[in-house]
Length: 283
Image (tube, rainbow, N blue to C red):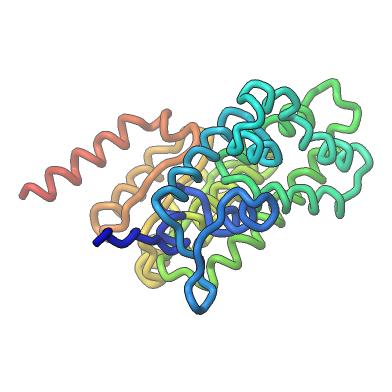
């Protein structure tokens, strides 16, 4: 008797592949890339072959293949190289909406792309190139396009983070000490969305002051039952803040991690924290 094929729920598949359920559904509904089975109640179930196909799709997207061109690749009707020839086509509507200052069109395009692409791919293939174009010093519409681009992206991220907050049990706090005028607030919100995709209900505190410790931080972490504190940024943190973060990690047993350039800037601090954790476990 043949053994039964193991089936996986969509949440399990999301954790295994890093592709969130919204994107998996979009790949099925709009492009027919995956055809999961269904339970009697309509819940999707995926086989191991489906999971391997998802990983293959993800590898093509990371190479720069547009999602609309993945189906021919799966069917073997087009070569990998040919599918990448016009992989920037999706950027045209976004840049056009920015040029014409059409917020509705920009929001529509970004919302669709955020559903169809895993967040790391979206950031690399959409956000990064648009940032370059908008922030170009030769761009005569630089100021207005920056404002429109950042505000639209922030609002979309905030909406998605809020939806996850309603259904997630684990709590995380995201801190940023970057000044709002530095123009990277949309990247901070993308960091919040990344945490949401990891299954956290996220509280974001940005534009925090550098000049002193954060009074009340320990109490907030303890009272709210925060399970993870993440600091995101591009600038070196002062020693007072690092000491406070270390206390969160050691005294409240709330893991603290760094993302962005500060992870490299404070690599020694991270190494020390890992060493302290290892020593604590061995005592």
